[in-house]
Length: 485
Ligand code: NAP
Image 1 (cartoon, rainbow, N blue to C red):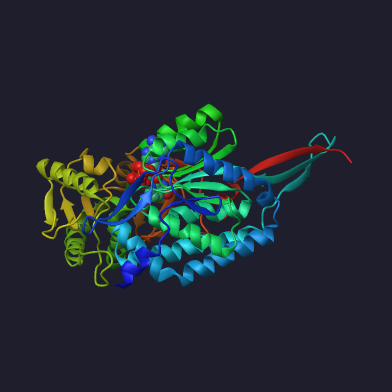
Image 2: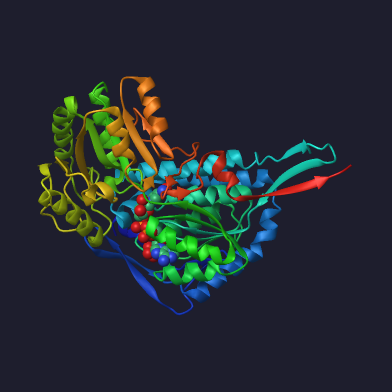
């Protein structure tokens, strides 16, 4: 038995409800595939509506006792989860590389990042402050406390199967909420492995329930229409976010939405070009391009555009593409065939409208869900590749002449998650940052994600913030007491 076989044979593949592994009530299962080979890694229980209701029952049964635990006790559980996740980093990274496809280096970085949400919220759990003030009339005191928001439904995507879950579970536990996590069907194994990890860290039965299931629309809708459910935290596409916002309207469920992005990466001619290239490689290629924060469009000032494009193409062409679990791999396969087809059609569309391929531009010869690291220049304005999330290893480059033009191009999208700006003039960097319509900016930096910072988007990229102190407050409901004494 190889190490990977051994890892897979020990995995939880049933639903995790009320602290127990249970099969789906209707008995269904579905296969999880390795995108490097398209072979089956494991078969996982496929939840239906009755299972979703059982998970909400379990979360409801555990809710009062968990809300009443001491903040310090919840902090200790979160700290233990951080320690366990750190200790299990290699196994979790291998699992992520297997079911998602990303390179082990990316998977290891994800596990470390994911664990940091447990550490950060272990530190935050004891800082759920209220306030006390005097009414302007002087007639009474205004006392504000924060209570757990209630039962949460957490829906996560496949691109960061661990971190997108811990970014929600961490603050929900810190606030004293119970929850049902619905992971993406492409990557349920990591979420199930985390259920076991959280159990070992001391999370009581019913507090965290994990519900893999391919009928995501039905099971999430059923939970959102149960009046006991008080919050939805969703990370995924803007398209599905829009559907879920409509669903939440029926029962006025509190929502946090982390949706799609279309990040501009702006390079001014006065930038340190070495640093800009380094940042571009991180912003574009972290996770093989499958990140909501991925640089989707490069805008480069005319005097440095040719040099930047040539050097970026050299760096991209030098990347080693292969199975995520192979130690030497720098870029793994995309998550599935549909993802490859989407990337390929965006590239073909740009090329037929006149773009030049500096490197890549197609599928490599090896079998599996691969796409070549690609750089395009001369991309026509209005091309689909500049408007839609590529979610793959492709960098389209457009040239600009003035600061105003760069800002206008950067903001020409309905998305507003993150933007990147490289310039040697800090005043210009801050000025342009202020003018960009997005929730986050990387200023002379290709990576913004940090558990201690408020992550989230403006415009159609989302509502609310995850991480930081803001991320904790999103799992609380303020209680205002007008009081005389
Ligand atoms: P997705 O198709 O929107 O799916 C996300 C989750 O929603 C999955 O668990 C999916 O389950 C579930 N889902 C799909 N249709 C649903 C429905 N009708 N009702 C309820 N749940 C439903 O997104 P994805 O392809 O997994 O992830 C990629 C997207 O996520 C990109 O747009 C990316 O930008 C975004 N993202 C955003 C952030 C951020 O922080 N802003 C972070 C990471 C990713 P199934 O897998 O079973 O379909």
